[in-house]
Length: 495
Ligand SMILES: NC(=O)c1ccc[n+]([C@@H]2O[C@H](COP(=O)([O-])OP(=O)(O)OC[C@H]3O[C@@H](n4cnc5c(N)ncnc54)[C@H](O)[C@@H]3O)[C@@H](O)[C@H]2O)c1
Ligand SMILES: O=CCCC(=O)O
Image 1: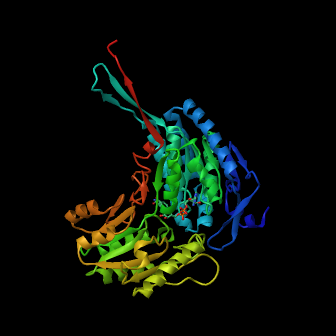
Image 2: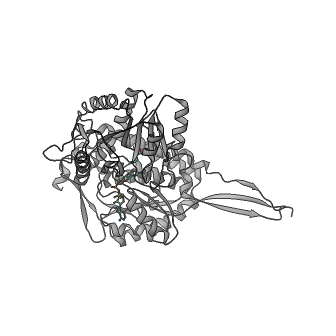
Image 3: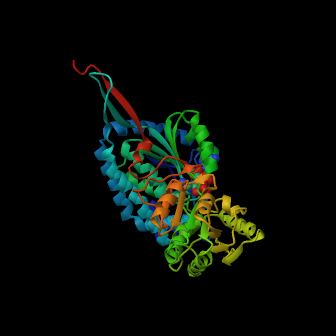
């Protein structure tokens, strides 16, 4: 056994869930040319494993197999049967929660507690779509032509390409695969190269419970050019991507070449507004969840904290007191409450945002440093005196940095909040009902949290506006992303 696995495998109850192969045509396989890439543990920088590095031919084969699989799958299952398969997958995920959480914690860096939370969250999408599967109703529409009936059928769009990021190695996968399977599509998944093991383990559980192997293909790769096959291959009818706005735009352009339907869940720059009438303790507690979840590497994390000037000092003091209690360390360590970032690039970006802000007049209230030693750690940091000229105002930090801006009026708060090309999530704290409705309407985002920093759940239509993307995942709208509506006109019904 390779050296790198020795310390890791004994931590799992089912070591067979740790897989380094691709899954193509129902088989766990090496890449065609035998190449692999290394995956690192962010807390130690050690190699966790070496995964099949699929090339374009591997991905093409997976797409062709998935296409054959999709046609058979849709013909041979009812919606209710697909719901039952998903329910079995949900049960298997929950039965193996601890192993999945361990794999996720080691490869992503988030704390074991957060990793368990993510597995439960990921499973909730599978449960949700197991229940939505039999409810893909069509319609009967009154026709304007005499003796005519118009019907709609909701049919699977076909074979789907799925590309996901490393920050939620489980939930971003299940949020896409579950609705696709529910409606009778097949999927070819390119998991994130930083965190492929969770996706591979979830796939094993899916096929073990009876989801037909040809409906799910998983092609890990570090070759980004090869991965674009999922955006260009004409067999793929839908591309669902979660990741950065730059890559999302590039893939959307490629997908346009064959007019694929796309879902794009992209970057954010969430405002978190604390009005003068807010409950400041509630707002500070919520900011901790909203800002420091997954070490600040969440697309819906607060990126800019805007506090009314009359409460900014008091709110900042409360936030700093809470940040002071965070324990930075390896996710597997029980005392840790905030883990490392995923890689060195993530640490460097936080440091660059702090350096830039301080050079332009911001003050470090707590944190501010990269600890010495191994691991991609950065201290959780709060900055005060932050202004719109600083990098952090416009760029998603994606790390444990809470910059506090100030404002003087509701109008100014909304203007500052909307002064970004992103429009994913926004949060605000107020006890004034009129303001709650006004500001919720005025924020240019897809999701608003009012008096809460936690919005994510399977029932929520998840997605953004502006350059944060297209489409909605989860919720009653999630199935439609993987369906086409076919209208059927039946004429001469008096015959
Ligand atoms: N809106 C959402 O739901 C959501 C959720 C999670 C993360 N995100 C966003 O994702 C970003 C962080 O994730 P990331 O750094 O992994 O993003 P990323 O765009 O670099 O990577 C996302 C995925 O795309 C792949 N990829 C990267 N370049 C590619 C290329 N040229 N061709 C094909 N595939 C390519 C990556 O390997 C990965 O699997 C942040 O901006 C965050 O806000 C958005
Ligand atoms: O990072 C983005 C997704 C996180 C979530 O679903 O709350």
